[in-house]
Amino acid sequence: MSGTSEAVAPSRADVPVEVSGVTKYYRTAKSGTVHALDEVSMSFKPGEFVSIVGPSGCGKSTLMMLISGLIPVSSGTIRVAGKEVRGPVREAGIVFQRDVLLDWRSVLSNVMLPIEIKGLNPAAYLRKARELLHSVGLAEFEEKYPGELSGGMRQRVSICRALVQQPGLLLMDEPFGALDALTREQMNLDVQRMWLRDRNTVLFITHSIEEAVFLSDRVAVMSARPGTITEVLNIDLARPRGAGTRSDRKFVEYIERIRRHFFAQGILSES
Amino acid sequence: MSTAAPITLPPSAGTRAWAWLTDQGAAIGIIVLIFVLWEVLTRALSVPVYILPTPSVIFVKIYTDLGLLMENTWATAQEVLLGFGLSVVVGIPLAVAIVYSRLFERVAFPLMVSLQTVPKVALAPILVMWFGYGILPKVLVAFLISFFPIVMNTVIGMRSTEKEMIYLVQSMGAGDLQTFVKVRLPKALPSIFGGLKVGIGQAVIGAVVGEFIAAEKGLGYLQLIAQVRLDTPLLFASVVLLSLMGVLLFNIVAWVERLVIPWHRQITEQTE
Image (cartoon, rainbow over all chains, first blue to last red; front, side, top):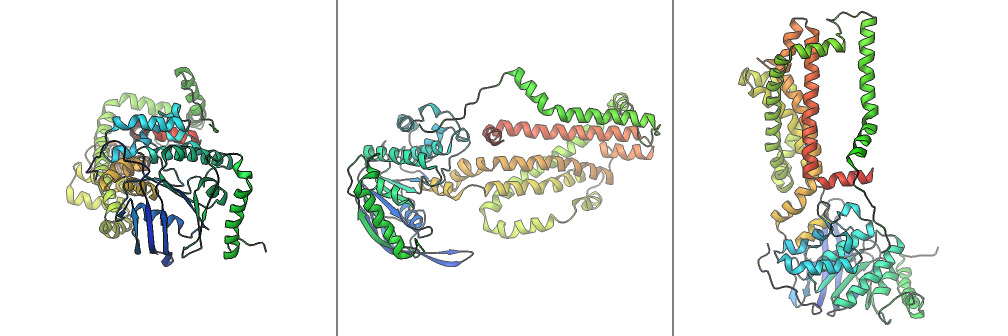
Protein backbone atom coordinates (compact mmCIF):
# COMPACT_ATOMS: atom_id res chain seq x y z
CA MET A 1 0.00 0.00 0.00
CA SER A 2 0.99 3.64 0.02
CA GLY A 3 3.44 3.80 2.87
CA THR A 4 5.55 6.82 2.13
CA SER A 5 3.64 9.87 1.05
CA GLU A 6 6.39 12.11 -0.26
CA ALA A 7 5.89 15.85 -0.71
CA VAL A 8 4.08 17.26 -3.72
CA ALA A 9 5.90 16.80 -7.01
CA PRO A 10 8.60 14.21 -7.58
CA SER A 11 11.31 15.88 -9.65
CA ARG A 12 10.85 15.43 -13.34
CA ALA A 13 13.61 15.24 -15.88
CA ASP A 14 16.01 13.05 -13.97
CA VAL A 15 14.88 9.53 -14.64
CA PRO A 16 17.25 7.55 -16.86
CA VAL A 17 16.32 4.01 -17.86
CA GLU A 18 18.91 1.31 -18.41
CA VAL A 19 17.89 -1.97 -20.04
CA SER A 20 20.72 -4.48 -20.17
CA GLY A 21 20.64 -7.97 -21.63
CA VAL A 22 16.94 -8.46 -20.96
CA THR A 23 15.37 -11.71 -22.04
CA LYS A 24 11.75 -12.59 -21.43
CA TYR A 25 9.97 -15.89 -21.71
CA TYR A 26 6.39 -16.32 -20.71
CA ARG A 27 4.03 -19.24 -20.62
CA THR A 28 0.63 -19.20 -22.24
CA ALA A 29 -2.09 -21.81 -22.01
CA LYS A 30 -2.36 -22.13 -25.79
CA SER A 31 1.13 -22.01 -27.25
CA GLY A 32 3.34 -23.06 -24.35
CA THR A 33 6.49 -21.04 -23.68
CA VAL A 34 6.90 -17.92 -25.79
CA HIS A 35 10.28 -16.31 -26.26
CA ALA A 36 9.21 -12.69 -26.29
CA LEU A 37 12.45 -10.74 -25.97
CA ASP A 38 16.02 -11.79 -26.57
CA GLU A 39 18.98 -9.99 -25.00
CA VAL A 40 17.59 -6.50 -25.39
CA SER A 41 19.86 -3.69 -24.27
CA MET A 42 19.09 -0.02 -24.55
CA SER A 43 19.47 3.10 -22.51
CA PHE A 44 17.23 6.12 -22.24
CA LYS A 45 18.72 9.44 -21.21
CA PRO A 46 16.75 11.53 -18.73
CA GLY A 47 14.18 13.68 -20.51
CA GLU A 48 14.51 11.80 -23.78
CA PHE A 49 11.58 10.87 -26.03
CA VAL A 50 12.17 7.39 -27.43
CA SER A 51 9.79 5.39 -29.61
CA ILE A 52 9.86 1.72 -30.34
CA VAL A 53 8.40 0.53 -33.63
CA GLY A 54 7.99 -3.04 -34.66
CA PRO A 55 5.51 -5.53 -36.07
CA SER A 56 2.61 -6.82 -34.00
CA GLY A 57 3.67 -9.34 -31.39
CA CYS A 58 7.36 -8.40 -31.52
CA GLY A 59 7.50 -7.88 -27.79
CA LYS A 60 7.53 -4.07 -27.73
CA SER A 61 4.64 -3.95 -25.27
CA THR A 62 6.37 -6.63 -23.22
CA LEU A 63 9.44 -4.40 -23.02
CA MET A 64 7.31 -1.57 -21.71
CA MET A 65 5.66 -3.82 -19.13
CA LEU A 66 9.07 -5.00 -17.96
CA ILE A 67 10.29 -1.41 -17.55
CA SER A 68 7.13 -0.55 -15.59
CA GLY A 69 7.97 -3.41 -13.22
CA LEU A 70 4.53 -4.94 -13.60
CA ILE A 71 5.96 -8.16 -14.96
CA PRO A 72 9.39 -9.61 -14.07
CA VAL A 73 12.30 -10.18 -16.45
CA SER A 74 13.47 -13.73 -17.13
CA SER A 75 17.09 -12.61 -17.17
CA GLY A 76 19.03 -9.36 -17.43
CA THR A 77 18.46 -6.17 -15.47
CA ILE A 78 16.46 -2.99 -15.81
CA ARG A 79 17.30 0.13 -13.87
CA VAL A 80 14.99 3.10 -13.54
CA ALA A 81 16.52 6.22 -11.99
CA GLY A 82 19.50 4.08 -10.96
CA LYS A 83 17.47 1.54 -8.98
CA GLU A 84 17.00 -2.01 -10.17
CA VAL A 85 13.37 -2.71 -11.01
CA ARG A 86 11.87 -5.41 -8.81
CA GLY A 87 8.23 -4.35 -8.58
CA PRO A 88 5.89 -1.64 -9.86
CA VAL A 89 7.92 1.49 -10.61
CA ARG A 90 6.41 4.39 -8.72
CA GLU A 91 7.99 7.06 -10.94
CA ALA A 92 6.13 5.77 -13.98
CA GLY A 93 2.90 7.07 -15.49
CA ILE A 94 1.30 4.61 -17.89
CA VAL A 95 -1.05 5.05 -20.85
CA PHE A 96 -2.45 1.97 -22.58
CA GLN A 97 -4.17 1.69 -25.95
CA ARG A 98 -7.44 1.17 -24.12
CA ASP A 99 -8.11 4.21 -21.98
CA VAL A 100 -9.47 2.07 -19.11
CA LEU A 101 -11.22 4.97 -17.42
CA LEU A 102 -13.48 4.14 -14.50
CA ASP A 103 -17.00 4.70 -15.79
CA TRP A 104 -18.41 5.51 -12.37
CA ARG A 105 -16.06 8.41 -11.73
CA SER A 106 -16.18 11.89 -13.17
CA VAL A 107 -13.39 12.98 -15.49
CA LEU A 108 -11.67 14.93 -12.72
CA SER A 109 -11.95 12.08 -10.28
CA ASN A 110 -10.46 9.71 -12.86
CA VAL A 111 -7.48 12.01 -13.23
CA MET A 112 -7.08 12.11 -9.44
CA LEU A 113 -7.09 8.30 -9.13
CA PRO A 114 -3.30 7.87 -8.75
CA ILE A 115 -3.21 10.54 -6.04
CA GLU A 116 -5.99 8.77 -4.17
CA ILE A 117 -4.42 5.33 -4.45
CA LYS A 118 -0.99 6.56 -3.40
CA GLY A 119 -2.55 8.29 -0.42
CA LEU A 120 -1.21 11.72 -1.38
CA ASN A 121 -2.90 14.93 -0.34
CA PRO A 122 -5.57 15.59 -2.99
CA ALA A 123 -5.72 19.33 -2.34
CA ALA A 124 -2.09 19.63 -3.45
CA TYR A 125 -2.79 18.01 -6.81
CA LEU A 126 -6.24 19.28 -7.66
CA ARG A 127 -4.86 22.35 -9.38
CA LYS A 128 -2.43 20.27 -11.41
CA ALA A 129 -5.27 17.97 -12.49
CA ARG A 130 -7.37 20.92 -13.63
CA GLU A 131 -4.41 22.48 -15.45
CA LEU A 132 -3.83 19.27 -17.34
CA LEU A 133 -7.48 18.95 -18.34
CA HIS A 134 -7.44 22.57 -19.42
CA SER A 135 -4.31 22.03 -21.52
CA VAL A 136 -6.03 19.29 -23.53
CA GLY A 137 -9.24 21.28 -23.94
CA LEU A 138 -11.30 19.36 -21.41
CA ALA A 139 -11.69 22.07 -18.76
CA GLU A 140 -15.45 22.11 -19.16
CA PHE A 141 -15.74 18.34 -18.96
CA GLU A 142 -14.32 17.70 -15.50
CA GLU A 143 -17.70 16.84 -14.02
CA LYS A 144 -18.76 14.66 -16.97
CA TYR A 145 -18.60 10.89 -16.91
CA PRO A 146 -16.42 8.91 -19.35
CA GLY A 147 -19.54 7.47 -21.00
CA GLU A 148 -20.33 10.95 -22.28
CA LEU A 149 -16.98 11.47 -24.02
CA SER A 150 -15.64 10.54 -27.44
CA GLY A 151 -12.73 8.11 -27.85
CA GLY A 152 -10.20 10.90 -28.35
CA MET A 153 -11.41 12.78 -25.30
CA ARG A 154 -11.27 9.63 -23.18
CA GLN A 155 -7.69 8.98 -24.19
CA ARG A 156 -6.80 12.58 -23.31
CA VAL A 157 -8.24 12.00 -19.85
CA SER A 158 -6.15 8.87 -19.48
CA ILE A 159 -3.02 10.85 -20.44
CA CYS A 160 -3.88 13.49 -17.82
CA ARG A 161 -4.27 10.68 -15.28
CA ALA A 162 -0.77 9.42 -16.14
CA LEU A 163 0.69 12.92 -15.86
CA VAL A 164 -1.06 14.25 -12.75
CA GLN A 165 1.75 13.52 -10.39
CA GLN A 166 4.37 14.64 -12.86
CA PRO A 167 6.00 11.27 -13.39
CA GLY A 168 9.66 11.26 -14.33
CA LEU A 169 8.94 8.42 -16.70
CA LEU A 170 5.98 8.23 -19.05
CA LEU A 171 5.24 4.86 -20.64
CA MET A 172 2.78 4.83 -23.54
CA ASP A 173 1.70 1.62 -25.25
CA GLU A 174 0.14 2.39 -28.64
CA PRO A 175 -1.93 5.11 -26.99
CA PHE A 176 -3.51 6.34 -30.23
CA GLY A 177 -3.94 2.99 -31.96
CA ALA A 178 -7.71 3.05 -31.58
CA LEU A 179 -8.23 6.65 -32.74
CA ASP A 180 -9.08 8.01 -36.16
CA ALA A 181 -6.28 9.56 -38.23
CA LEU A 182 -7.18 13.21 -37.61
CA THR A 183 -7.64 12.81 -33.86
CA ARG A 184 -4.39 10.92 -33.82
CA GLU A 185 -2.53 13.77 -35.51
CA GLN A 186 -3.94 16.23 -32.99
CA MET A 187 -2.95 13.92 -30.13
CA ASN A 188 0.62 13.80 -31.46
CA LEU A 189 0.77 17.59 -31.28
CA ASP A 190 -0.72 17.55 -27.76
CA VAL A 191 1.78 14.98 -26.53
CA GLN A 192 4.69 16.89 -28.00
CA ARG A 193 3.53 20.12 -26.35
CA MET A 194 3.17 18.47 -22.95
CA TRP A 195 6.54 16.78 -23.25
CA LEU A 196 8.28 20.01 -24.26
CA ARG A 197 6.85 21.54 -21.10
CA ASP A 198 7.59 18.67 -18.69
CA ARG A 199 10.65 17.07 -20.31
CA ASN A 200 10.11 13.72 -18.68
CA THR A 201 11.61 10.54 -20.06
CA VAL A 202 9.11 9.01 -22.49
CA LEU A 203 8.93 5.50 -23.89
CA PHE A 204 6.40 5.45 -26.70
CA ILE A 205 5.34 2.15 -28.27
CA THR A 206 3.71 2.35 -31.68
CA HIS A 207 3.45 0.56 -34.98
CA SER A 208 3.10 3.81 -36.87
CA ILE A 209 6.52 4.68 -38.28
CA GLU A 210 5.40 8.22 -39.05
CA GLU A 211 4.14 8.82 -35.54
CA ALA A 212 7.40 7.51 -34.07
CA VAL A 213 9.57 9.75 -36.26
CA PHE A 214 7.35 12.79 -35.68
CA LEU A 215 7.50 12.56 -31.90
CA SER A 216 10.86 11.11 -30.99
CA ASP A 217 14.44 12.02 -30.30
CA ARG A 218 15.33 8.44 -31.10
CA VAL A 219 13.45 5.58 -32.72
CA ALA A 220 14.32 1.97 -31.94
CA VAL A 221 13.35 -0.59 -34.56
CA MET A 222 12.44 -4.04 -33.31
CA SER A 223 12.45 -7.35 -35.15
CA ALA A 224 9.73 -9.96 -35.03
CA ARG A 225 9.65 -12.41 -32.11
CA PRO A 226 11.87 -13.05 -30.27
CA GLY A 227 12.18 -9.27 -30.20
CA THR A 228 15.58 -7.69 -30.57
CA ILE A 229 16.48 -4.11 -31.35
CA THR A 230 17.85 -4.01 -34.88
CA GLU A 231 18.62 -0.29 -35.16
CA VAL A 232 18.32 2.89 -33.17
CA LEU A 233 17.93 6.07 -35.23
CA ASN A 234 18.60 9.58 -34.01
CA ILE A 235 15.88 11.84 -35.32
CA ASP A 236 17.44 15.18 -36.01
CA LEU A 237 14.48 17.44 -36.67
CA ALA A 238 13.87 20.86 -35.12
CA ARG A 239 11.29 21.25 -32.33
CA PRO A 240 8.53 22.02 -31.97
CA ARG A 241 7.58 19.85 -34.90
CA GLY A 242 4.43 20.73 -36.77
CA ALA A 243 2.65 20.76 -40.10
CA GLY A 244 5.88 21.52 -42.00
CA THR A 245 7.75 18.62 -40.45
CA ARG A 246 5.84 15.94 -42.29
CA SER A 247 6.93 17.32 -45.68
CA ASP A 248 10.54 17.82 -44.57
CA ARG A 249 12.94 15.81 -46.76
CA LYS A 250 14.72 14.39 -43.70
CA PHE A 251 11.42 13.28 -42.16
CA VAL A 252 10.62 11.34 -45.32
CA GLU A 253 14.10 9.82 -45.41
CA TYR A 254 13.84 8.58 -41.80
CA ILE A 255 10.56 6.91 -42.60
CA GLU A 256 12.02 5.30 -45.71
CA ARG A 257 14.97 4.02 -43.76
CA ILE A 258 12.82 2.41 -41.08
CA ARG A 259 10.51 0.96 -43.68
CA ARG A 260 13.48 -0.70 -45.37
CA HIS A 261 14.09 -2.63 -42.15
CA PHE A 262 10.66 -4.12 -42.34
CA PHE A 263 11.13 -5.01 -46.01
CA ALA A 264 14.44 -6.65 -45.15
CA GLN A 265 12.77 -8.67 -42.39
CA GLY A 266 9.97 -9.69 -44.71
CA ILE A 267 7.34 -7.97 -42.60
CA LEU A 268 6.59 -5.72 -45.57
CA SER A 269 6.80 -7.11 -49.08
CA GLU A 270 5.82 -5.89 -52.52
CA SER A 271 5.12 -9.22 -54.15
CA MET B 1 -10.78 20.52 -29.80
CA SER B 2 -11.48 18.26 -32.67
CA THR B 3 -14.44 16.34 -31.34
CA ALA B 4 -17.78 17.61 -30.06
CA ALA B 5 -19.34 16.20 -26.91
CA PRO B 6 -22.84 14.78 -27.03
CA ILE B 7 -25.13 17.35 -25.48
CA THR B 8 -27.94 16.12 -23.30
CA LEU B 9 -30.70 18.35 -21.97
CA PRO B 10 -32.47 17.34 -18.78
CA PRO B 11 -36.05 16.58 -19.86
CA SER B 12 -38.93 18.22 -17.97
CA ALA B 13 -41.35 16.14 -15.90
CA GLY B 14 -44.12 16.55 -18.47
CA THR B 15 -42.03 15.38 -21.43
CA ARG B 16 -40.74 12.49 -19.33
CA ALA B 17 -44.25 11.30 -18.47
CA TRP B 18 -45.27 11.60 -22.11
CA ALA B 19 -42.12 9.75 -23.23
CA TRP B 20 -42.90 6.98 -20.72
CA LEU B 21 -46.44 6.67 -22.03
CA THR B 22 -45.35 6.51 -25.67
CA ASP B 23 -42.67 3.96 -24.70
CA GLN B 24 -45.00 1.79 -22.64
CA GLY B 25 -48.20 2.63 -24.52
CA ALA B 26 -48.01 -0.37 -26.82
CA ALA B 27 -47.44 -2.80 -23.94
CA ILE B 28 -50.27 -1.33 -21.86
CA GLY B 29 -52.55 -1.36 -24.89
CA ILE B 30 -51.89 -5.03 -25.56
CA ILE B 31 -52.57 -5.99 -21.94
CA VAL B 32 -55.85 -4.06 -21.93
CA LEU B 33 -56.81 -5.63 -25.26
CA ILE B 34 -56.15 -9.14 -23.91
CA PHE B 35 -58.34 -8.49 -20.88
CA VAL B 36 -61.14 -7.12 -23.03
CA LEU B 37 -60.97 -10.08 -25.44
CA TRP B 38 -60.87 -12.50 -22.52
CA GLU B 39 -63.92 -10.88 -20.93
CA VAL B 40 -65.90 -10.76 -24.17
CA LEU B 41 -65.03 -14.27 -25.35
CA THR B 42 -65.66 -16.07 -22.04
CA ARG B 43 -69.05 -14.34 -21.83
CA ALA B 44 -69.94 -14.93 -25.48
CA LEU B 45 -68.99 -18.61 -25.31
CA SER B 46 -70.48 -18.86 -21.79
CA VAL B 47 -67.42 -20.65 -20.40
CA PRO B 48 -68.23 -21.89 -16.89
CA VAL B 49 -66.57 -19.96 -14.05
CA TYR B 50 -64.84 -23.05 -12.68
CA ILE B 51 -63.00 -23.46 -16.02
CA LEU B 52 -62.14 -19.86 -16.81
CA PRO B 53 -63.47 -16.92 -14.80
CA THR B 54 -63.68 -13.56 -16.56
CA PRO B 55 -61.25 -10.81 -15.52
CA SER B 56 -64.08 -8.94 -13.84
CA VAL B 57 -64.92 -11.95 -11.65
CA ILE B 58 -61.24 -12.30 -10.71
CA PHE B 59 -60.97 -8.63 -9.73
CA VAL B 60 -64.16 -8.82 -7.68
CA LYS B 61 -62.72 -11.90 -5.97
CA ILE B 62 -59.51 -10.03 -5.16
CA TYR B 63 -61.58 -7.21 -3.71
CA THR B 64 -63.86 -9.38 -1.56
CA ASP B 65 -61.10 -11.70 -0.30
CA LEU B 66 -58.46 -9.01 0.01
CA GLY B 67 -57.72 -9.77 3.67
CA LEU B 68 -57.14 -13.45 3.07
CA LEU B 69 -55.05 -12.78 -0.04
CA MET B 70 -52.87 -10.14 1.62
CA GLU B 71 -52.20 -12.34 4.61
CA ASN B 72 -50.96 -15.13 2.38
CA THR B 73 -49.10 -12.75 0.09
CA TRP B 74 -47.20 -11.50 3.10
CA ALA B 75 -46.35 -15.08 4.13
CA THR B 76 -44.95 -15.84 0.67
CA ALA B 77 -43.14 -12.50 0.50
CA GLN B 78 -41.33 -13.30 3.74
CA GLU B 79 -40.11 -16.60 2.33
CA VAL B 80 -39.01 -14.93 -0.90
CA LEU B 81 -37.17 -12.12 0.85
CA LEU B 82 -35.41 -14.40 3.32
CA GLY B 83 -34.40 -16.86 0.60
CA PHE B 84 -33.25 -14.11 -1.71
CA GLY B 85 -31.44 -12.34 1.12
CA LEU B 86 -29.64 -15.56 1.97
CA SER B 87 -28.60 -15.94 -1.67
CA VAL B 88 -27.13 -12.45 -1.66
CA VAL B 89 -25.36 -12.86 1.67
CA VAL B 90 -23.88 -16.24 0.74
CA GLY B 91 -23.62 -15.86 -3.04
CA ILE B 92 -21.71 -12.62 -3.41
CA PRO B 93 -18.93 -13.46 -0.92
CA LEU B 94 -18.66 -16.91 -2.49
CA ALA B 95 -18.28 -15.32 -5.92
CA VAL B 96 -15.53 -13.05 -4.56
CA ALA B 97 -13.79 -16.11 -3.13
CA ILE B 98 -14.04 -17.88 -6.50
CA VAL B 99 -12.47 -14.92 -8.27
CA TYR B 100 -9.68 -14.45 -5.74
CA SER B 101 -8.83 -17.97 -4.57
CA ARG B 102 -7.54 -20.70 -6.83
CA LEU B 103 -8.85 -23.29 -4.40
CA PHE B 104 -12.40 -22.00 -4.65
CA GLU B 105 -12.08 -21.58 -8.38
CA ARG B 106 -10.93 -25.18 -8.83
CA VAL B 107 -13.07 -26.91 -6.22
CA ALA B 108 -16.13 -24.87 -5.28
CA PHE B 109 -16.89 -23.50 -8.73
CA PRO B 110 -17.04 -26.77 -10.70
CA LEU B 111 -18.95 -28.38 -7.84
CA MET B 112 -21.46 -25.56 -7.87
CA VAL B 113 -21.86 -25.75 -11.64
CA SER B 114 -22.46 -29.49 -11.57
CA LEU B 115 -24.93 -29.17 -8.68
CA GLN B 116 -26.77 -26.61 -10.77
CA THR B 117 -27.98 -29.46 -12.99
CA VAL B 118 -29.85 -30.99 -10.05
CA PRO B 119 -33.46 -29.80 -10.31
CA LYS B 120 -33.82 -27.81 -7.11
CA VAL B 121 -37.56 -28.29 -7.18
CA ALA B 122 -36.95 -32.00 -6.66
CA LEU B 123 -35.13 -31.21 -3.43
CA ALA B 124 -38.19 -29.53 -1.93
CA PRO B 125 -39.83 -32.75 -0.58
CA ILE B 126 -36.53 -33.71 1.07
CA LEU B 127 -36.23 -30.30 2.68
CA VAL B 128 -39.79 -30.57 3.96
CA MET B 129 -39.03 -33.97 5.43
CA TRP B 130 -36.01 -32.55 7.21
CA PHE B 131 -37.32 -29.18 8.32
CA GLY B 132 -41.07 -29.65 8.63
CA TYR B 133 -44.00 -27.46 7.66
CA GLY B 134 -42.64 -24.11 8.79
CA ILE B 135 -41.02 -21.29 6.86
CA LEU B 136 -37.52 -22.83 6.71
CA PRO B 137 -37.90 -25.33 3.83
CA LYS B 138 -39.52 -22.64 1.61
CA VAL B 139 -36.74 -20.21 2.39
CA LEU B 140 -34.21 -22.89 1.50
CA VAL B 141 -35.85 -23.74 -1.82
CA ALA B 142 -36.04 -20.02 -2.69
CA PHE B 143 -32.38 -19.73 -1.71
CA LEU B 144 -31.22 -22.74 -3.73
CA ILE B 145 -33.00 -21.64 -6.85
CA SER B 146 -31.97 -17.96 -6.76
CA PHE B 147 -28.42 -18.58 -5.61
CA PHE B 148 -26.86 -19.72 -8.87
CA PRO B 149 -27.63 -16.75 -11.12
CA ILE B 150 -26.37 -14.40 -8.42
CA VAL B 151 -23.05 -16.22 -8.01
CA MET B 152 -22.54 -16.65 -11.75
CA ASN B 153 -23.21 -13.03 -12.60
CA THR B 154 -21.02 -11.77 -9.78
CA VAL B 155 -18.14 -13.97 -10.95
CA ILE B 156 -18.56 -12.78 -14.54
CA GLY B 157 -18.73 -9.17 -13.40
CA MET B 158 -15.64 -9.47 -11.23
CA ARG B 159 -13.72 -10.98 -14.13
CA SER B 160 -14.80 -8.28 -16.55
CA THR B 161 -12.18 -5.80 -15.37
CA GLU B 162 -9.63 -5.24 -18.16
CA LYS B 163 -6.16 -6.47 -17.29
CA GLU B 164 -4.75 -3.07 -18.25
CA MET B 165 -6.93 -1.55 -15.54
CA ILE B 166 -5.51 -3.94 -12.96
CA TYR B 167 -1.97 -3.22 -14.17
CA LEU B 168 -2.62 0.49 -13.99
CA VAL B 169 -3.75 0.54 -10.37
CA GLN B 170 -0.94 -1.87 -9.46
CA SER B 171 1.55 0.56 -10.98
CA MET B 172 0.06 3.22 -8.73
CA GLY B 173 0.85 0.95 -5.81
CA ALA B 174 -2.61 -0.46 -5.13
CA GLY B 175 -2.80 -3.74 -3.23
CA ASP B 176 -5.48 -6.40 -3.60
CA LEU B 177 -7.93 -4.67 -1.27
CA GLN B 178 -7.72 -1.31 -3.02
CA THR B 179 -7.98 -2.98 -6.42
CA PHE B 180 -11.11 -4.74 -5.22
CA VAL B 181 -12.79 -1.72 -3.67
CA LYS B 182 -11.86 0.86 -6.27
CA VAL B 183 -12.01 -1.17 -9.47
CA ARG B 184 -13.26 -4.74 -9.40
CA LEU B 185 -16.38 -4.29 -7.27
CA PRO B 186 -17.76 -1.15 -8.94
CA LYS B 187 -16.95 -2.63 -12.34
CA ALA B 188 -18.90 -5.77 -11.40
CA LEU B 189 -22.00 -3.97 -10.11
CA PRO B 190 -23.97 -3.88 -13.38
CA SER B 191 -23.46 -7.62 -13.77
CA ILE B 192 -24.25 -8.29 -10.09
CA PHE B 193 -27.53 -6.45 -10.44
CA GLY B 194 -28.27 -8.47 -13.56
CA GLY B 195 -27.93 -11.57 -11.37
CA LEU B 196 -30.09 -10.07 -8.62
CA LYS B 197 -32.87 -9.30 -11.08
CA VAL B 198 -32.91 -12.90 -12.30
CA GLY B 199 -32.52 -14.17 -8.74
CA ILE B 200 -35.49 -12.31 -7.26
CA GLY B 201 -37.83 -13.86 -9.84
CA GLN B 202 -36.38 -17.30 -9.18
CA ALA B 203 -36.86 -16.84 -5.45
CA VAL B 204 -40.60 -16.31 -5.97
CA ILE B 205 -40.77 -19.58 -7.90
CA GLY B 206 -38.82 -21.38 -5.17
CA ALA B 207 -41.09 -20.15 -2.39
CA VAL B 208 -44.27 -21.15 -4.21
CA VAL B 209 -42.91 -24.59 -5.06
CA GLY B 210 -41.99 -25.03 -1.39
CA GLU B 211 -45.56 -24.15 -0.45
CA PHE B 212 -46.96 -26.64 -2.94
CA ILE B 213 -45.15 -29.45 -1.13
CA ALA B 214 -46.30 -28.66 2.36
CA ALA B 215 -47.46 -25.44 3.95
CA GLU B 216 -49.93 -23.83 6.28
CA LYS B 217 -49.96 -20.43 4.62
CA GLY B 218 -48.78 -18.55 1.55
CA LEU B 219 -50.17 -17.99 -1.94
CA GLY B 220 -49.03 -21.43 -3.11
CA TYR B 221 -50.88 -22.98 -0.19
CA LEU B 222 -53.94 -20.86 -0.95
CA GLN B 223 -53.87 -22.18 -4.53
CA LEU B 224 -53.91 -25.77 -3.28
CA ILE B 225 -56.93 -25.01 -1.09
CA ALA B 226 -58.69 -23.23 -3.94
CA GLN B 227 -57.98 -26.14 -6.26
CA VAL B 228 -59.54 -28.63 -3.86
CA ARG B 229 -62.61 -26.42 -3.49
CA LEU B 230 -62.82 -25.83 -7.24
CA ASP B 231 -62.64 -22.12 -6.43
CA THR B 232 -61.13 -21.12 -9.78
CA PRO B 233 -61.51 -17.35 -9.24
CA LEU B 234 -59.39 -17.66 -6.07
CA LEU B 235 -56.78 -19.65 -8.03
CA PHE B 236 -56.55 -16.86 -10.58
CA ALA B 237 -56.56 -14.20 -7.89
CA SER B 238 -53.53 -15.90 -6.33
CA VAL B 239 -51.76 -15.90 -9.69
CA VAL B 240 -52.47 -12.19 -10.08
CA LEU B 241 -51.06 -11.40 -6.63
CA LEU B 242 -48.01 -13.59 -7.23
CA SER B 243 -47.33 -11.77 -10.48
CA LEU B 244 -47.80 -8.39 -8.86
CA MET B 245 -45.44 -9.38 -6.07
CA GLY B 246 -42.84 -10.54 -8.60
CA VAL B 247 -43.12 -7.33 -10.60
CA LEU B 248 -42.91 -5.21 -7.46
CA LEU B 249 -39.85 -7.02 -6.11
CA PHE B 250 -38.14 -6.87 -9.50
CA ASN B 251 -38.76 -3.16 -9.71
CA ILE B 252 -37.41 -2.60 -6.22
CA VAL B 253 -34.16 -4.29 -7.29
CA ALA B 254 -34.12 -2.23 -10.50
CA TRP B 255 -34.70 0.93 -8.48
CA VAL B 256 -31.83 0.13 -6.10
CA GLU B 257 -29.68 -0.53 -9.17
CA ARG B 258 -30.37 2.93 -10.53
CA LEU B 259 -29.49 4.44 -7.16
CA VAL B 260 -26.27 2.49 -6.79
CA ILE B 261 -24.99 2.69 -10.37
CA PRO B 262 -26.33 5.83 -12.03
CA TRP B 263 -23.47 5.76 -14.56
CA HIS B 264 -24.68 2.45 -15.95
CA ARG B 265 -28.01 3.83 -17.06
CA GLN B 266 -26.20 6.69 -18.70
CA ILE B 267 -24.06 4.31 -20.71
CA THR B 268 -26.87 2.01 -21.75
CA GLU B 269 -29.05 4.94 -22.76
CA GLN B 270 -26.26 6.30 -24.91
CA THR B 271 -25.65 3.07 -26.71
CA GLU B 272 -29.30 2.64 -27.51
